[in-house]
Amino acid sequence: MKLSKDMRAFETRIGYSFSQPALLVRALTHASVSSPNRQDNQRLEFLGDRVLGLVMATALLDTDKTATEGQLAPRFNALVRKETCADVARDIDLGAVLKLGRSETMSGGRRKLALLGDAMEAVIAAVYKDGGFDAAQELILRLWGSRIGRVEADARDPKTTLQEFAQARGEQPPAYVLVERKGPDHQPEFTISVQLQDGTEGRATAGSKRQAEQAAAKTLLAQLEQDK
Image 1 (cartoon, one colour):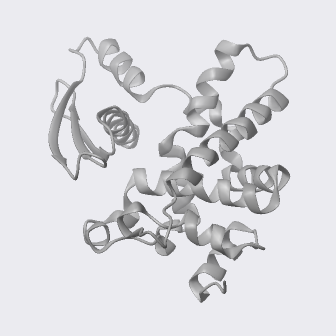
Image 2: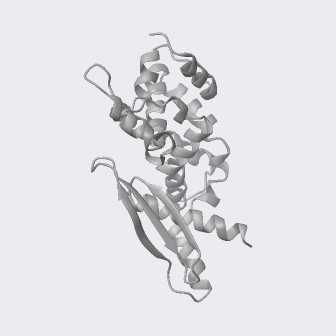
């Protein structure tokens, strides 16, 4: 299989050239455009999640040799969560080469957190199957880059941080409201709004209520930081 110009450019962006190009194509194929002759990326996503977890667990142990399990766990979660995978995917413009059905394309699928995060994990698995663990590890450490070093600052749960902020000001806990739910049952999208007592609001959309709440809290915290 010969890769398109866009796919070759993507290989350059991730710093890896596939000896089995079909693996890359599959990793970037969403279920909305799959067919009996075209496999989607869901199985690769499953594998990539596990490869990412092993690489990150190893990196954290190597980075801080005195950290306890209780200290490592939130750092690990911050590095492997879907939001972080999607951030990395945006850094390499993965959305530009995602193969999507027309409905997903029209609804902004190339920017959706869940789709980007899933595809990033699938790309990791594709590299693992094409070049082995060392190649996948090198890719992950390169693409995650400084996130690993600054994970301590990112590891705190945004909802907990926002609640502590409200309590420190003597306010009621933040209120989370489901603004909209759309999409099919197998791939829903939730838009959540979070408000503080003074009316300050953050809003975000994700593939689960939990992810949307976390993202909304993170958005509001960033806004509060800017307003200081």
